[in-house]
Image 1 (cartoon, rainbow, N blue to C red):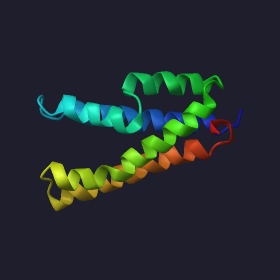
Image 2 (image 1 turned 180 degrees about the vertical axis):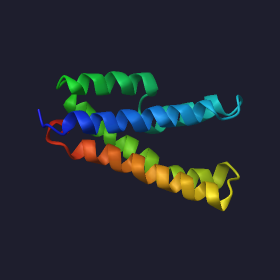
Image 3 (image 1 turned 45 degrees about the vertical axis):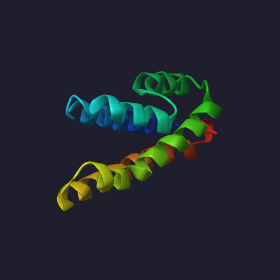
Image 4 (image 1 turned 90 degrees about the vertical axis):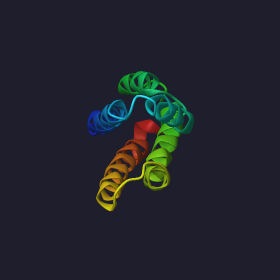
Length: 118
């Protein structure tokens, strides 16, 4: 196993946990819609992501991981545009969304590029 792999997996786990926390802070009536959108775009909910990343730590489901990470990166890549359309955010909030999305997308792509995630 590549020595950097645990750190790359941890980075994606951190970004997913932060995303889940942000969703939990959204208004009650918005949360289910946002979570469904996340699951639809990434192919799995947060619990399934945790399971997939745990399996990846053991060297399992690596092909599935690579495909899933591509979907996750695309989800984060599109987040700023979805925020512009739907959340009525200020310019300052949109800058924060763009920064977070870039960091999260980069984490997913870095793990996807790791030798074991192919």
